Image (cartoon, rainbow, N blue to C red; front, top):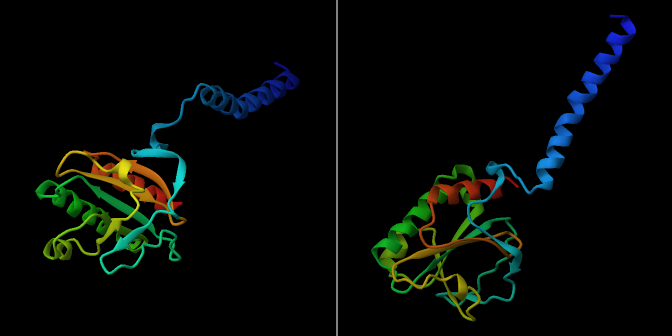
Length: 182
């Protein structure tokens, strides 16, 4: 083999080495394939819904500001009728998910659309309760009693993800970690 042939083979191998991944990505992307590790576990709300007009009021009458100057995400807990033992356990699970975020816990607000007894509310601190005055989140509320659904609101006030009844808290935490990184 002459040096000229060896150089050509080397150049072709280098060309194949750098173009093969690009061609593979183009083919797989064209067929709609995405890596499983980059998908969210909740239901993506497409397009994200602006909640600026949604009126939610706390027990003291103050309105909940969706746009947060501290750049916090809001985890909205949406209970079904008659929040009892199972619903309260799920709320405690949400509180523990927030605590498990360590230094990022301060960047997450927990909001419950509904009311709780003062003793129950104290056990779930820093959960804040609000009333949905105009029914803006009504379609996300579970219809079954003693159940809980969850939604994420980004710092700009857009509803971006929702989790139905029976969501997995570990997967919710993974999604929360992912959005906090962005």
